[in-house]
Amino acid sequence: MLQSWGMTVLERIVDWIERISAQAKKENWPSPTRVMICVICGLFYAVAYSIWAAMVTAFGRGSETLASLGLSFTQVVGVYFTTGVMGGILLGLCWPLTRWKLGAGVLGFGVAFLLLATLTIIQQSVRDIGEFLFISVGGGFGGFVAGLLIWTAARKGV
View (cartoon, rainbow, N blue to C red):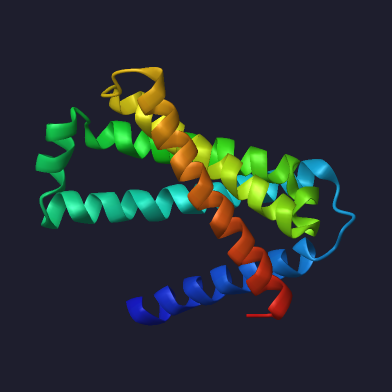
């Protein structure tokens, strides 16, 4: 019974994501709808990473690692939800940039920079602005590359 209920929920989530993907291909979304859908996707990101953090904390050495960084589990989960919502808003507002490969890279940079800047600020271990920029901008370039790869994969139908 529980397994069939879980599959039903999973099938509904997959169906919902497929419907949103079909809508995403339309260029003429109203902006508030696009932003809301991107925020919901950001919340999915936050939930997935929070579950991962809970598993690592419960079954691994996550609590020791967090303590050594001066962080608590709730701070990390808070960052995931904060950046999920803020990243969703950024993604929704800047969605038209994804028409071009360079635009997708710039958007990936912005979202990754936002995530790493927020994590760096909450960690409070950065000694100077240079270190903060090195971490955030360096991660942003990773987001830039990810944006380019996602754009390329989406155009190839992968």
